[in-house]
Amino acid sequence: MVLYNSLEEYRVCKYCIMDTSDPEIIFDEEGRCSHCKRYFHIAQERILPDDELKIRLGALVEKIKNKGRGRKYDCLIGVSGGVDSTYVAYIVKKLGLRPLAVHLDNGWDSELAVKNIELTLKKLGIDLFTYVLNWEEFKDLQLSFLKASTPDLEIPTDQAIIASLFFVASRNRIKYILLGENVVTEAIMPKRWSSGQSDWKYIKNVHKKFGKFKLKRYPYFSFFKRLYYFYLKCHVINILNYIPYDKNEAIDILEKEIGWKNYTSKHYESIYTRFVQGYILPKKFGFDKRRAHLSTLICSGQMSRERALEEIAKDPYSSGDLKRQDFNYVVKKLGLTEGEFERLLSLPIKKFDDYPSYASSSFYRIIRFLELNKTIKAWVQMFLGRR
View 1 (cartoon, one colour):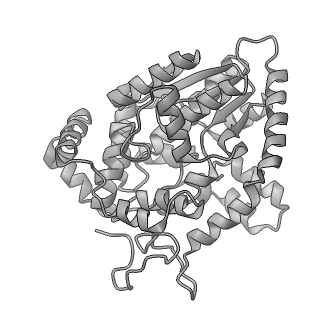
View 2 (cartoon, rainbow, N blue to C red):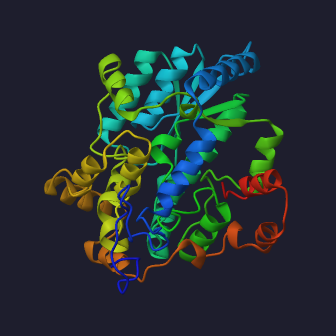
């Protein structure tokens, strides 16, 4: 089953490898897609010359050190075991900062991810706080999203990560949260493939419709919590946008200097994420998230289009045995039978807009309609989890 209209011609961008598996993709007369154009627009705004980056990074580090003076930690970092967050840990120590690392344990860490986190933080001398989710609640929420039949299956984890980071930062009076999100490897991601990561109203309504239990201990990030953390002056900084970030160079450094081990694909440090991206999304929703990741690398000059086409032609799983092993593990851990799981996969496809969210609220629609100052609009979008 696929999202794009099967009556339309299948097309692939002539510059990157995004294709009509995104039903909202637009091609120009030269065959370039809307995602390429958006990437270069974002890059023009956010990727600065190296000398200017150096100045801005120096000023940022000075500010973080001043705010954290006299305290045990001057910044907080999130760690998943993946390359981006591990490189953040490496960079902040090189910059002379004193970070506290936070890891969200949602019950799906791979053995390699746990080893990578332990090894990295021990080598770098960084303290770790692990935020462990209540499994029964979280399982109920993940099952709710499977029943909701949208491709946004990883949103419960994304929401909990950002909420737990702000919770730990405020409890330790830390003003800066440094994350690994970045333009050069992550800027391309179709909205129809994943939306609502920060939209608590959307998550709450999906769970209200399909969940069985109340979410008493699940960390969430509502509109009012955003206001509270804004009042506390907690800042989120995507630190990899302050350096000339090259993914392959980062992997080489981490492997040689720390002993960190690479995964077969982006975000495969989590067993559930690996299964969602490698099995559920292609099988049920007809798209492969690697297209977006690889296309971003093409646009940022870190991979050739020929190499990306070779990669996307491979099975998302490195072996059929691992795919079967993950299938059995995920189905059993979610408390389903194989038949129940297959029934969930066969439900009609829905999308983010089919459920109530901040984005569908009257307030947000009015804001979008009004000709407000661009900055004011951006602030409102941020508080409603739309940025």
